[in-house]
Length: 160
View 1: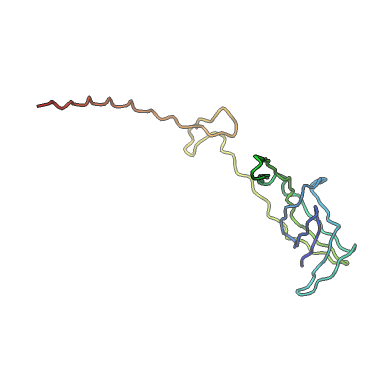
View 2: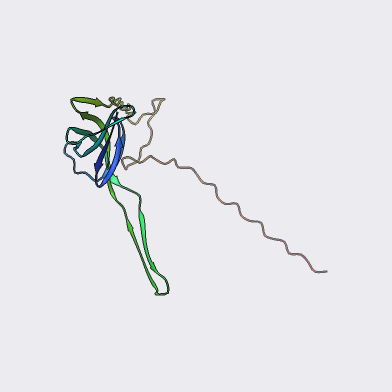
């Protein structure tokens, strides 16, 4: 089961469980609906134009900015150069359901992540471990440095 949707001026082929990056979407409570469905394929080899009978829903995974794209304008022999950078905003959406003509195809649920147990500032042997004053930073181990060894004076060769 897959569908072809239009979002942000581009077309995407999506199936339940896929994660796609679309142009930035203003979401409410992490849910997104795509009503501009162009085609739906319920069985292998058959594609049906969807019209207004289909909808695709998803959940927002993350929002961010893409890689920097450099735009360089140049005119030879005219001493004209212009360099600009651009980073496009995006929203990563996980497709959760494709509904078409009374049928609903849902993505499998993701397993929930378990939280790691907090050590509470103690080492395995029960002794205290020094922690950093800044949260989220690891404490550095201090190593006593050796003094540099004095260089031996170079001996001069005598002329004969």
